[in-house]
Length: 483
Ligand code: FUL
Image (cartoon, rainbow, N blue to C red):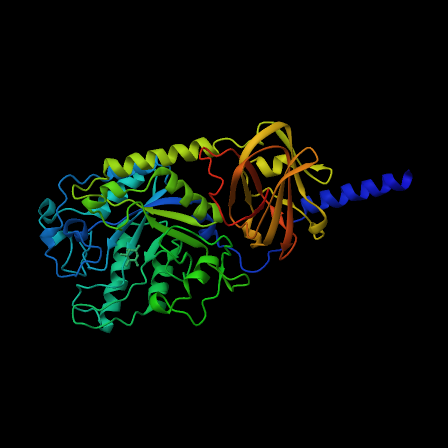
């Protein structure tokens, strides 16, 4: 009896030790800036410019400035809709490949200042930055290095132009929560391609906007997820090897960008870009092709639900407004998310979460990513267990790792039980910043969660269980399921 007691006491001691120890980080970790960015998990993209008026996707650069003439532009309307959609910010195409600048740049003659819109006095970046600020949204810009208009394009002088434009927009309209470099690199007006001075571009951003994370295919801070469908990999490492790769055509293959590298040398999380319509710019003919709310919800699960950020493009029309088609679907999308995620089935005393004999409910449900539970070095012999007070109908489980200690979990297995009867077994790979798993609805009295492979002792900072408003058992096909 004494021996058993002693044994129990030492187990309890070991578990509480595991809970209180500060672990050492494994591999690359996110910077403060990247962690902040990741918390802005969903934001809107706005493709707007001459293409809006010419019905093109890639403007030629030879369009007359007068082409750009929105009749009722109102950035406050964009912000109202973004807010109501639950987006945390807006990124706009300050300059797309056609070279037209939505602000009166001193470094180009192809800008709003040369157009007749508001007698050449209009400034979309100014208006949008102010509207974002007033409504508490983050603001960012997309600046295409490829420029089919600028006379200096294809010569070293263009690198000066691009650097000056970056400095100009940062100084006038910053701070930005993200800066977007497009990888596309075609010919300029003189038929030449540009040799971009990426090192200089990076050091410019680091100097003038050290707290602004920069996106491109391979970072430096945020990477492309490798497709324009808005899907991150079912296995998604925040790590990427960039040595030997370049932006644009020299980038790693799409599936590498999609999944990252398990032991990659740099922390470069993925961003999923996708348009609410088939095209990036507004085309009237696509009004009937706006994505349905359920499709957007599925994209949400496959981007944010796989630890990436989601940038959803909602292009303003020729009036300079978001159409009712787009806003209606955005509102329904927001409603689906609210109904699905506003309360976890394990919060509010509806269950207990145990690690061995230790109750860890508070650490995993307090919404604080600084409280986490370690499954210890011997994690293969332990598991988290959710015990519901009564049977719960559920179809979704959400897990988070405290990524500032590195991304550690390589594989996990989850089992749903009715008492001692196994109902369902699912297994998957990475967790990272946030992992949302969905499956056909089950009535369960308890859930067990096992980490089956990890780089180091696994840490979990949050656990949620939900009944999604969309009952589609095949929402995330990435997990291996056995019923
Ligand atoms: C691509 C561009 O070529 C498209 O026009 C669009 O801007 C998309 C987001 O990035 O590289």
